[in-house]
Length: 452
Image (cartoon, rainbow, N blue to C red; front, side, top):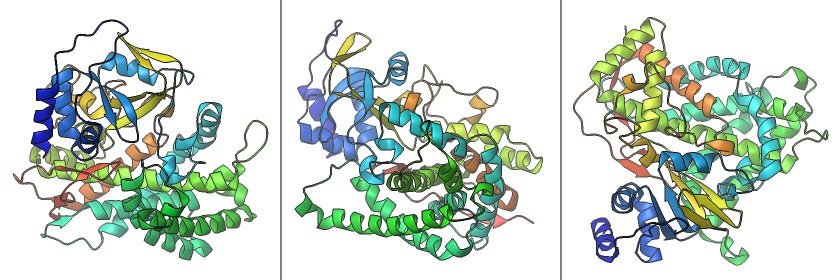
């Protein structure tokens, strides 16, 4: 099916010349066919379309409509630096999943103000407070790992990152322990189903009472009940001013006019932290172990570095994992102005602009031999936007980027210090698209033994 679709593109496409003010070259396939390729065979379809049309082209897909896909670095920069009067939040977006009060659903001044309130929780000294939590949760999870037997490490990584973000948000537990246990049960199935439905617009009310929408609503209602309880308990805590957890920080924070984040929106933000804050990080960790299994020389260097207390190569490895196995491969904006000039092209109002991160990361002019997994390329240099956009770019760059990198770093260091990972010549695991994130198809299978 996939080969047939891409062959159709060759048959139906003509050579397109571009002139200033013209439209980008279009993919000439039926809208539904383009949608299927975009949703289910994206990486191969995008590679084919880039080869056929260049690094700027137009697609027409369900939900997003007419969309310009761009992976030309200079043009990507213009997208990331565009003002909110030119480009606004893509529609639909992840607020379908996390709620309209989530930072994903806000725009303009509201989005800017919300980010200002949220940012301190994920930067500076706050990161130092989380290191011990990350190490403790990693050691707790790996206590029962099988020795000498291959297993999927993706799910253990997901449990680690979920426990870390829950402790970071709500603190150590105490009277809230039972509620946190309920969240540990509900969040994983909510995330699995939610990824599939994330960009599907809400259906009419009578449809929403059935099928996957009903199940999502059931999960969300259960999550909300727990969240509101935990928020109320924290707000009533006489020691709130001394607490260092994220919820306490947000309850103490104020907008310029002295108001707090409304409780309904705070609930949406906390779910955003939990969902977006653990799933993509766990996936990146899964890819890291998938890559290390197949690169014994690098693995030996990383073990040596961890034993000596270093971390430069490990952090370079994280950057390279996020480049070569891009977890979230597309970011989007919508044209708000009457039009948006993208190089020689003029994009009309209400069109979507999609930055294709994976193709940017695979550009040989930016990264020589991009197909190689080579962390040493980042050993003495750090990638900069727009060449490297693993966490997006511009005003909507991921707030938790520093938190995610720090968490991956501590988990990798802890595992390398306590386990030896068996390396072999196993075939690379293919990418499986869950709806938002690209994960290792086999769950990042590894074999480990405890170090003595």
